[in-house]
Length: 153
Image (tube, rainbow, N blue to C red; front, side, top):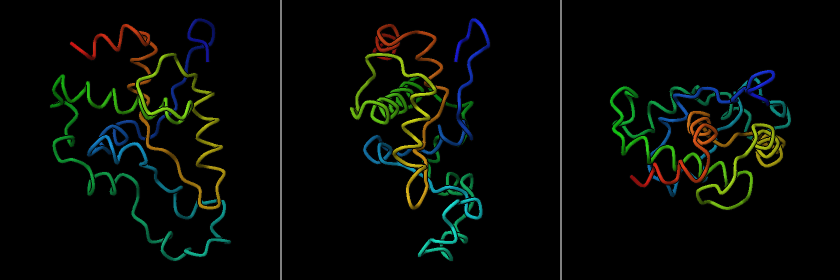
């Protein structure tokens, strides 16, 4: 949690798939994925256990449902990066502050994890909000105001 003393850890697995798992901003806001099938802590109490166990792995879901133009990260244009960074940062801000807009302040990884846990993981059917750490790192690097200006260029 401190890049000067111990280093800073950005939690995001899988990061590239989280970037690719995007079609349009409106649906991305609510996009979550279930906890891994057999690893679900509530699997035995699940009313839909058989369906959950048959769900494909997240990477397969991303491949099948994402915008094909996002399949090769090396071919992202500056406008694609701007759109993805904005989408993930608005989603982070919504997760932490309940406002789907560009953040006005930085959010710590601890706050993001805590909100993920409270809103999504600690539910009867545990899931997580799809959120990549790449855009959050960029936000931490540039700061809110400077990054917002860079995204307008």
